[in-house]
Image: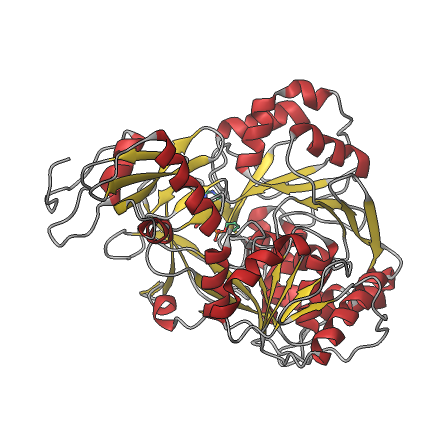
Length: 572
Ligand code: WT7
């Protein structure tokens, strides 16, 4: 256990002195230089004398462990980069990663970046339709996947003429490969010792992360290599990573936490990371921490609430004394969870707030700063945040008033656009502020308190799902005339998906039909998007213009005031 001062100075001091130049200096980067995240996470760390240091400790389902040094990672990412070049994948092409949390996923992201490609990680639990929408929107050229997921890709192939290569990373030759498929075994491939890394510049696109909105298709938040400047320094200051730390980020790289703080930030800091590809149980997680002597742990409220539910008995069976710093992200972290973690681990979880779009942490609880349980903390030094009026978008100066979190653009990791959708991107900016879409208040000490989202997007277990996507999928079911999808409170997942459904003539509500519909959505979209509850209704509340008012249904679920329903057409 390290007993050193935090990397970051006391908050007020740091706010006065901080400049992004500090991060650039540490990374030896000057404006105009080439900057490649893949190189910064591998070759540069080796050059700094850490070639033999462990970069990744990976553990699979059956507790098999693989270890890779920074030099192994340098060579394997070269090997992947060269393989893609040989396939005639060009700089700027989108390459998807559709895999469980296997080493190939982590090294794949860096390999793609090293050859100038745009990495598009997608959650391996996605169903065919979720996958199709995102691959079609990005006009993706190649996809890395595993045998167990390839069937989902095969099914949508005809709709994806631009997808040239399906790269299977664990093919054993037992079955013949099909159209466009190619086997690639990272470990057995001829190692590429030296590779000319693509000379990307600050604004060269790096990663494309799809995120769901209230309406329309999911949007691809497009990031650039310059994001490293934010990700490096926030990792150092907020996660407080030091040279001797063993760090565990529980997020999947299909989501932004898993790339910004599960790949880029920690490895650019030359820190050892652990990855577990086995499922969640409290017992498994504590064993993992104990076995690998994890010191810094970045997780999410849903997991913490599940651990809480499991109780402190399981905690006590394990030696978790290696832990020294805990952080959380993705959803509101209840005060009770912070208090429980102090009790269970002797350490509080530090809440951090940010988004796919922001690329790096925004409002956080810093090591050494007083935690007010239930508060997200304060803006990262070097970033200007405020809350703005929900209608006029003018900054609010009254403490305690609820407004929308707004940020002054200009921090390095901000997305540069939504892929193919500049209009949606532009609509995020008003009066010179980036609008987060989240409601919050600020207290007399400058701490932010999360209130809720300002749209209909559902945050289930820290994952955003768009009601529109689910409603569109539901409409494809023969029995369904119309539907409205909202979030419903849940003690562990914060929200789960609930669907109100009006049936077509000739169909009767039944338990069987309910299950069939649930399964229909799970297969098409994902388990996250699957309604946990279905309520059959005769009709849905609509505005006079015919728009379904999800707000009304949601308010009922949460026991909240329904608000202004003067435009409502039908009675409830
Ligand atoms: C949305 C962004 C950024 C990593 C994972 C999520 C919600 C995020 C917090 C928090 C309350 C939070 C917001 C935000 N959210 N962190 N600490 N407290 N809510 O990325 O999928 O883009 O989701 O998650 O609503 O807008 P994302």
